[in-house]
Amino acid sequence: MPALSDAQISQYHRDGIVIAPWGLDSDTVSALRAKLDRFLDEQRITDADFVPDIIERDASWLEYATRPEILDAVAQLIGPDIIVWGSALFCKSGRGGKATPWHQDGHYWPIRPLATVTVWIAIDDVNRENSCLRVIPGSHAPRKSFEHDTDHSDAIVLNQVIRSEHLQTSEPRDIELAPGRFSIHDVYLIHGANPNHSGKRRAGMVFRYMPATSVFDRELARQQVREMGVLDLSRRALHLVRGTDRSGHNDLQPSNI
Ligand SMILES: O=C(O)CCC(=O)C(=O)O
Image (cartoon, rainbow, N blue to C red; front, side):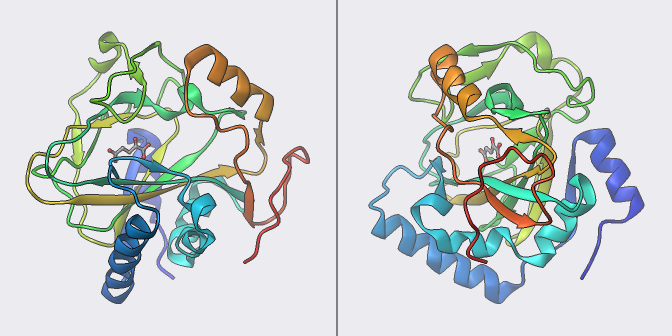
């Protein structure tokens, strides 16, 4: 299996994001595209700009989250004990739709100590033209959650928007990915995406991985719903996909893999 080099791991720690120099092969990508179309159809999803909890809707998505070519890279960054606690599609049709506001994921995630990597896997060719993910490199470095405002506008996929003064640190970087390639980003990294007006679909699938030394705190999740009106994460299934629950406090969903 390929592995991240020391330079790529250093880049991840410096920038808060790294693009793996390998990806899913083309047969897997074709199967993934067919599965995506089938899934949207079966679930009658017409607005796919943001579809959370795809594993909870259909457990077969877990197969992609646990592929060795992805999990091995995750283990290099967060260690050998790994819980998958989140999954989503960001499938932006190309006919306008929603922006992803600038935000830090960790601001509304109930994990303590706060630690998670997100793997963002390109299903389509994803580039600046069709509004790829954009990040502020290095913005994770203070390991601090910055102030966000709550905004319930329909024009954005998420109701937490970071205050603009926190965006000044460096120029945004476009994360362009060929189909099957993936990036891995840190829980504190500031990121977002423009609406996609390109006429070309931009589909990505994400999986969230926490080290099993941290705890997924369901009571904190309920508090975050009350305080910020965010998506309720309190009933998320936790899939231990490698190692053991080192914290001893995560109520795990028995894994079927
Ligand atoms: O792909 C997007 O537009 C947003 C992705 C994102 O915010 C995330 O993966 O945390």
